[in-house]
Length: 179
Image (cartoon, rainbow, N blue to C red; front, side):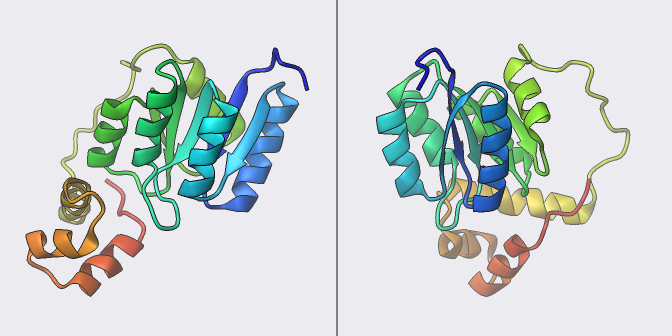
């Protein structure tokens, strides 16, 4: 193994996605490892010590937000991209506060992820929408914010939102509505 290669860790519970993305980065000259659970990720963070990481927000039984903190504790200079199919303003803000340099939504390919790693600072060319968020999108954002404040505890979030736990779980399982 060439020690000069940049070490990248891909953390996602979708094993096929990890494999495809990993192969794409290997072809680009990276030393890549992947993890599919929080436990595997913690082990790889400690043993592999990546300088770059792609972290999925939703792992099977946990949040990738915890792993951003763990990566930064191990090495403050690790560059982290938060990747998700369940984008929300609350989780994007939290990911950046914890140390992610970018927050991008799936589907994303290796070129898009690499561009996010390379991009320096914020993109001020992003167009601001003239339309307000829809009521359904506002509901989704609020549920995500409360869930985040409850550290992912769905039962507690449901209590705070004054709704049945199963109703909240059903709403969270759906894809977020577009803006």
